[in-house]
Amino acid sequence: MARIIYKNGCEDQNRLECIEGIEIDLLNGQKALIYPKYSKKALLDIKDWDRWLDAGISETAALRLRDNQAATAALLEAGSPAARFVTKFTSERFGRFGLPTLLAAMEITEQDGEIDKLAREIDGADLLEDFSSSVWSCSRYNPNNGWIANGNNGYANGNNLNNRYVAAPLVN
Picture 1: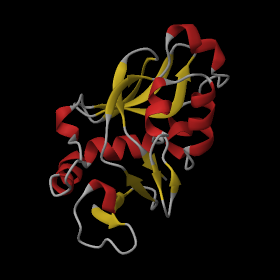
Picture 2: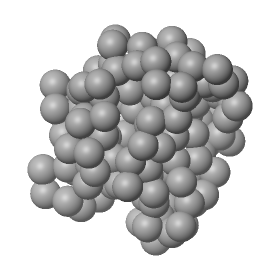
Picture 3: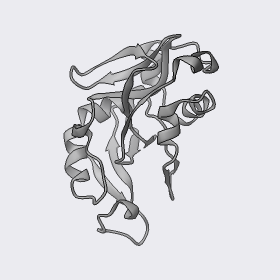
Picture 4: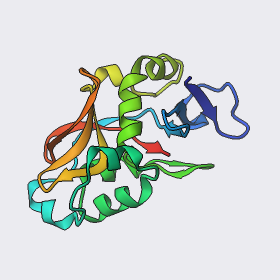
């Protein structure tokens, strides 16, 4: 179930500057906070692939990942356009946003209609339906690919690091 989380003292003020984000439940019992501003970005430009020191992880390992902050920080250090975009957003209560874990990215694509329903109530919010249905995670698949949630087909797969997919700011 998705719900709007308001900043302290801003309850029921549906302007972007009055919200912390939209909270969703994840399959593993965690909650995630999504900031409803999105951009289509590459995870890494080809020239920076070697700067991201993560060797890659299996789908199971990527789905088990619970913390997105360290992986997002490593991507930011490597020059990631997607990480640069999501980390420009912060929450007063929850801290800096990052790229979603693979499970969170999959939940975003699964719950996109519910997220957009709430985002329509928020002045200044973006809608996921206005972007590609694939969402970057903060995990690397192999040297040339990162894990994405493919919203059209409801599965995860590795995709080229320089492809442009949705960068969704999220706090796990």
